[in-house]
Picture: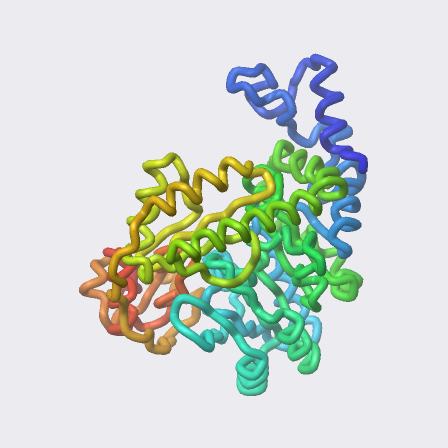
Length: 442
C-alpha cells in the first residue's frame, strides 16, 4: 500500500529546501525530529480540504476499515465533537430538536460538546455497579421509548475493557430509527480481530477510534468513521464540521504516522495482533493462577481487580513502577495494563515476574454506597458557562456542579454540570481523592 503523506514529506526533506514557511524550527534538527514537520505548503494538501496526498491516504484507511474514514490529529476529542455535530444536524434536518441518550461513562469531550452545541442529554445508567456502564438491550429500548431521543451515544470498550453487545444495541436503535454513535477510542484494533468487533461492522452509524491508543500511531492520531449510508448524507459536511473545533495547524507528523500505519495494518498487523493476544492470554492465566482477579472483556487489556488480592490499585502500581513497569491507569479498585503487539515477549515476562512476586493478603473491603441518580436543575451549557467558584468537596452538598468532575475515565461521572451534588456524589468524590469541585455561584 502506498504511503503518500510519508513519501511527500521524505521527498521534501531530501531537497534540503529553503523553508520560508512555518514552522519556526525550519527542519534544522535543533530538537532532533523536525525534518518532516511541515505546514500546508504546495503539494502537502490540506486536512480539511483534502484533494491530494491526504485524500489518497484517507481512502487507503477507508479500505482497511471497510467504511468512510477521516483523519484527526487531535485525538478522539475532535472526532467526538464532530460526531455530536452530525447527530445534531441530522436531527435538525428531520425537524427535531437534538436529544442524545448517552451512557453515564461518556468522556468529558462529549460533555463539552453538549455545552458548545447546546443539545439535550438524557443519561443512561448501567445495569450493574458504579464502576461500569453496562447497557442491556432491554434497558436501551425502555429508555428510547420513554425519552424519544434522536440519537444514542455509548462508550465501547470502556477504560476497564468492558465490551457492550453493540450488534444487539444497534438493532434496537435501527428498530426505532435512532442513530447510534460509539466512542471506540480504546478499540481501533477491534477491526483486525477475527471476526471483527469494530462498531461499524456491528451496525453502529458512526464511531471514533483513537488510533494512537492501540495501533502504531503517534499520540493524537485518530479516526472518525461513518457507515456508508450515513456518509452518503453527510460526506460533504464532515470536514466542515471538524473545522469548527480543530486547530488550523494539524500536525503532519501525526498524519504521517496515520499514513505509515496503513501499510502496517494491511501487511503484518493482523498476524502480530493474533500472536500478541495468545501471549496476553497466557499471562492472564498465570496471574489468575497466582490469585489475581482479572476482568473479562476486550482481549488486549489486562484489568486487575486488586482488592480481592489484598491491595489497592495504587499499591500494585507502586510495586510495578519499582520494577520500571508503568501501567496505563490505577486507582483504589483497579489497575489497567495495555500491551500491544509491539511489546516484546520479555516485556510480558517482566510484568508477570513482578506481579507474581507480590504475596496475596486479606481482601480489602473499603468502598462507597450506591450512587444516587442525580437531580438536574439546569442544562450542561448553562452550568458550564455560568459564573462559578471552586469549593471544598466536603462543603459542596446541595450545590450545582459547574465542571466535569471525575477522578479518571473509568469512573461513571458522580456529578455532571447542571446537577445538584448529592450526599452519595460527595462520598464518591472523596473516595477518589477529589478535594475540590467547581460549582455555580449562588
